[in-house]
Length: 139
Image (tube, rainbow, N blue to C red; front, side, top):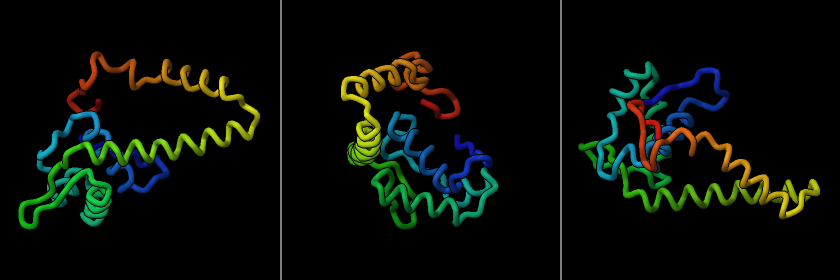
């Protein structure tokens, strides 16, 4: 379900957050689905439970999951989470666009570059149909 890349420079909790975000946004985890308990996921990944707890707190703050006291954490409705992710991506794209324009790239060249990136994207070419995912939860 979750694979940790120990060569990745990002903190482990950020890798966990990113992976759950992907699984929620692509539909591998449906709204209302219970999240693994902090303890069980920590044992499965051989991590400190505090690392998992921090990831869950960030996911909850971003609207991907919600917690019911005594019952655990569950996947939220994805509309809010998806909108937050789109807003974040828009901000990142704006920073990139500003850099490109300052480097002398025209708006038409920038559009062409984006179109090429979309065509080369492994995210689109790896799926057989929209919403498919393999046993590991990958979309």
